[in-house]
Image (cartoon, rainbow, N blue to C red; front, top):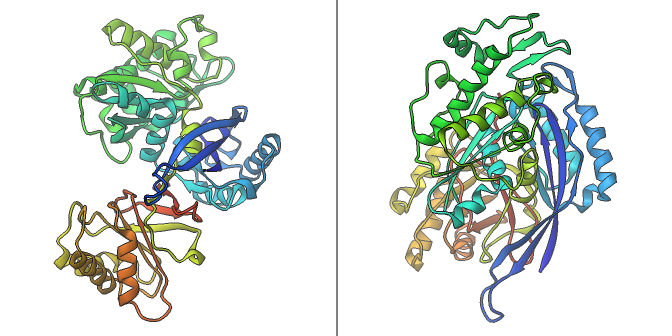
Length: 466
């Protein structure tokens, strides 16, 4: 049994927060069997206060201010960079679109720990928030699909789970900070992406004007209707279909719904502020949007599940659910590790035609030249000796023009045998790393940590900055 310390850092549109978690990794196999390491426990051991995200300008993150904030929280938690085994720095929502977002994420990751990954991308954010809110866990005990919608300052990130697996993830340009006000209630900001909806609704919002509460409620009611329609598989009204980020949802039937994020604090707070002045305590539409969502589901008689976490869902997901453990039958050159930001090349999905695997790999990696890549495929569930040799030959053929180490990731349990076959085919000192039990797709990136007992910790991520 081994304990790892994980950190989650969520730099969001409005707020920034950290958590430290203890992850317990244990061999669950009988003593006479091949070790099978699994994550058997996750415990949050420190939570930071919720800070406002520091900005130098509307389009620039204050990297120095963030670093000072994080350094202070490391000190308060009693941890040093060297104590951290895994974790994630998540640049989320509108913050991921700032000019220096990618640079800030990488700086923070290097500052925060050797195996902390800088990640962004609305789909990954949606999945982590769903895990932190408890949607993944709920889907294991409830019949039907479970959707979590994490609503923050700039975006709403939805993830659908079924029997513990993610079956859909998407994001919408809906958040508390789409419309902002000064202390007197005058409009100071209207996001461009919400203007088509304002035109459809006929709501005359304008800068430096104090809007009527009824006008704003018309807007937040329309946004609340979007979430309800997503769950009910109903068409979205004009002015809202363009709010999807990168891609739409899969229109899956969803039997159970819950909300997380800062706006969720007002959705579930039935005793929350109803006085008009208090609805604008954050100088944005967040509390009003929360009230609209609460009223919509009450009006329709559609029950909501209670989340385990609301505003902290994403950061808890980042600190406790961002990584997985490989199988124990791995083949590795330990001096290769740790590795960061290795792109995944996946030539096929499903059980591949081994005769064409080499050519398919060569075709895919042509875009990467001599850059380090990881080849990923499913492979047969219980491959024969002949199939192992055929897969090894295909990998060597496909990677013949790449001079870097051979990194192969397969889903089924045969990485050690494949690694031994590769070693027999590869001459010289070329290093080989074969992992199994990891599911990835083309376009993903992986970070691979130092071995834990006979397994390897892996973070699968998406690096997307707009």
